[in-house]
Image (cartoon, rainbow, N blue to C red; front, side, top):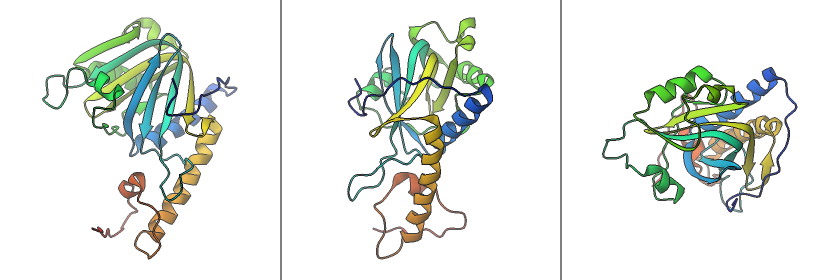
Length: 228
């Protein structure tokens, strides 16, 4: 089931609503700034997991490689899961794109910054309204009144592809195992320290291994040298 990640442990959160919102906003930003939707898998009715790459969350790299930046979000005990298509008749939007993404046969769509949220119900509702096609693969439709009453609501766009989910709980996992929401913030800070080192060494005689997320997160005023 979790072939790409170590199996997560279900963990109860003990945050106030305000603390939870702040921590989820950190997670939103770390994934959506330059990230992309990499994969998904499901084991209904227990969970669905979405995998994202290019995140600004530190993950332990293999030798002579950059950090993968890949994390999975598991949505436990979902009430509603729908895949959304923004422009279903465009030539570059195949009808069965969700199956293709699940089977690693679709180019990973980049997340649209500002259109990725665990915390903004109005934005989620707007995402649903923008959809030309809504494919509910589990539970109730996202327009059902009970959708917004769930403990967790989530929605995003990645180019023409999107997803909205309501569920009981959310966990973050990586190749190292589960990442608590407190640890997400620490790992984001660690990633930015790594990013600083990456750019300090980028054009030196001892550069770090090439990293997608660092390359597209360009320092202000930086003159870029493209190496063949």
